[in-house]
Amino acid sequence: MKKYTDQGKQDTRSGFGEGMTELGRTNPNVVALCADLVGSLKIQPFIDENPERFFQVGIAEANMMGIAAGLTIGGKIPFATTFANFATGRVYDQIRQSIAYSDKNVKICASHAGITLGEDGATHQILEDIGLMKMLPGMTVINPCDFNQTKAATLAIADHHGPVYLRFGRPKVANFTPVDQEFEIGKALMLNEGSDVTILCTGHLVWQSLLAAENLENQGISAEVINIHTIKPLDEEAILTSIKKTGCVVTAEEHNFLGGLGESVARTLAVHHPTPQEFVATNDTFGESGTPELLMEKYGLNNKAIEAAVLKVMKRK
Image (cartoon, rainbow, N blue to C red; front, side, top):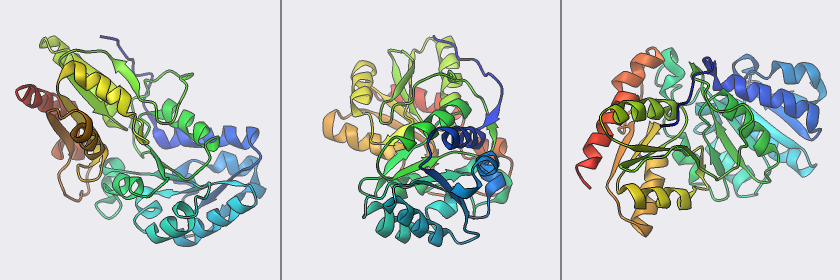
């Protein structure tokens, strides 16, 4: 098994912040908007270097999406930033009408996604955002796994024409992907080749999947781990190639099983290659206040839950 090393825990939102700083220096068309959460989105360095390219809209997320859509008409590439809950659920109509329907080149960049938002509780812990955004025609949906990949994704979406939803998180997590790894939108990344089961994972669950694969290897189970950083468009070729080899699959995500990565994979399998599948995701529920670690444990979003799902799905082969 290929070993990945935790290079030191970092928050993915800081990867976004570093990406924005670099874009500020290399792409004069990139502008940033924020809904009163500059510190949380880590974009102060971008603002310091490019004050004329930043728009503070205050706690007015719907207005922010409208402004962002308008800026594209003049050739700007707006990065609209706030918490994931406010970037999707609160402003869905504006995104649908002004951005997606109009095919505007807006990058919706959402921090504090999922249950690892932690102590702020259920009102802020959106677990439906991937489903909301992937249903919008033309919307690209990206959910990177660590600091390095989030920075790379931030740079990549600036060169991609069309609306994008970029999702990242609050807590410090393992940073393990290569700093110079190319980020290709829509192209899954093989992290570990295996023969007994496929684990398709995204976001914070990628590192947990690698930990699970190591433990499974000690039990004589060969797990193939694939990082699905782009949920839409989905890399169906990579998924089907792996599943035809292993004969079963576990999907792992920090999201409701309704509308998330697992559901997209299930559709692909139903159409092309019916295969036993188990889901590691929240089960049609809201979150609650607590530390990220305790919440991931309670809601079954860690390496132990992935291992259990693998043992269960292999019995269905």
